[in-house]
Length: 99
Image 1: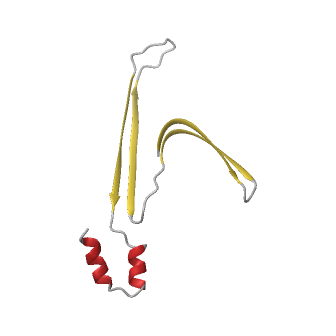
Image 2: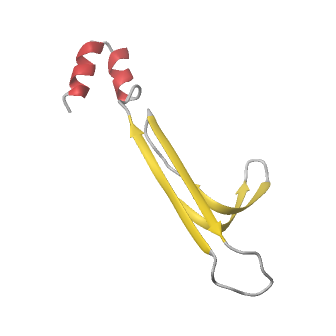
Image 3: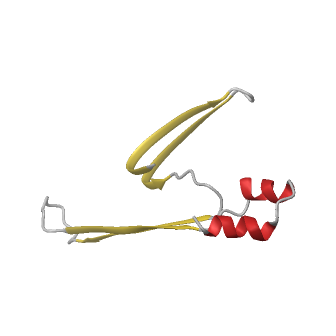
């Protein structure tokens, strides 16, 4: 989930009877992934303008950014369960490499 701008998050922790409030301004990224995943998000904003008391529209604003996701081989979960149950680890790796 990606968000950009102003946001307000309100929550309640019923176990501890606590409320939470978060006010944010900017970019946020929330990702739910499986094992062995790297996520990198970078962004920048540039503004070029002249300070003045008059309202002018001669300023320039530019934004740029990127998102990089690297997904590696799954190293736990069902593969580990297979090996712990007695499967040959090399055969499990070969089977995962074939797909």
